[in-house]
Image (cartoon, rainbow, N blue to C red; front, side, top):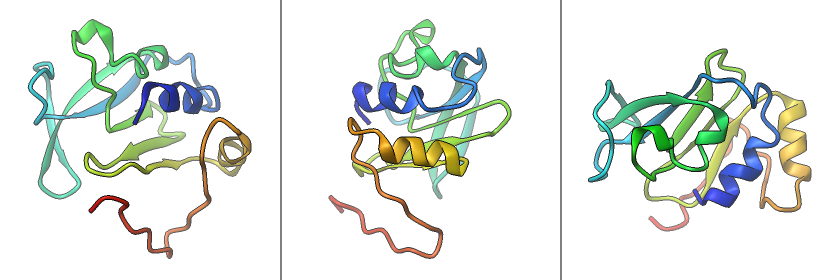
Length: 124
């Protein structure tokens, strides 16, 4: 996900000034920080980082790396953003109000999806 996309999404997220946004950064990058690890998306390992919403688009600078997390969410789980390391699409799970705001944002290319839809990867 680009920094511009991350910044645009962040403007629509409730709790955007929460100081405890959790991010999951793919552990396969060479420049990721040391930290707790979990497995998501099957067998992919991620390092968990935390910080403010303002740090997400910049790559969590306190952790000294420039990667935007592939997954990020607030402590209250009001929303979740995620994308696959090899795909261009970014998925947002949120309330209908948040989804409507994202869909209406002309700076984002956004489409509604539902759990019963098949979404094919663009580059795979």
